[in-house]
Image (cartoon, rainbow, N blue to C red):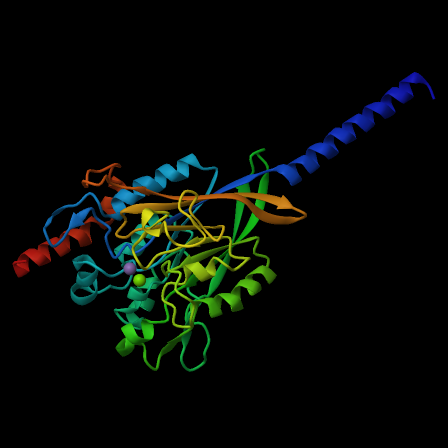
Length: 367
Ligand code: MN
Ligand code: MG
């Protein structure tokens, strides 16, 4: 073998080693930062406005939370946005749209108009979405462009899920070395079984409710079998460590025990998690936002806060794993109600008409 040949062989060897090692390095050590954003219990508070006192209130309103959403997205390489339910009812705007104006064909409910504009990746149904009856809900949901999930409400006759219990979203994410990966993100929704008592007149004979953890135990393994790399629970349910029973209203504590649920978006009880109110809850870390080691976030109510869970994902032995997580919330206002963020003017414009009609209607009533 002459020197030239030997040089070539060595050269090729070095190149292939370099290629091979860079490949394995990227596959084994590329970290994916995935940010999950939550709004919950918006209760039709689209505007920063108090309809009862007929004045601006900068401590509420999705037009404010929206600015936090834009900011949180800009800070992150990869992000997803979800709403956790109870978004249609809770103020005069919500009532006006159901009882006075109605939803005309082709006109999208302003809550879903706002969600479409903000490009939510998925939403859960909250118990209050059922207050106006299933027919109204079905009609308005036609305007929602994103997947709608709930795994705990079933058709009474067939015992089949009334909504889609879960979806598996395919998203391309970039790791910290600039490499793209296709991630299968499972998203499942829950709500308290108490709906059958709270909304008896609307629901009896039409649907039945199932215990939250029971539904999770059925569907989470199915989602894994269908290829979900990670699973996010849109849990319209609060946080309480009372012993679990089938009627448990606030089941986050028990969902957090499920090994294949990777992140929990909590709600329903209008609390702030992580937050001091939960400091004495067993196995709970209010600094990192974890319950039993699982990231959990609950973003108050009325758009007052944005919930954020930052996950770090890494492939270990061919499986995506959460290697680190932090959960926290950001507020739209300080304790005195002074705004911390700007109003999203584009969103305000999109929902202004129904807001103004509500204000005018209340005025006409002399309220
Ligand atoms: Mn609520
Ligand atoms: Mg609720």
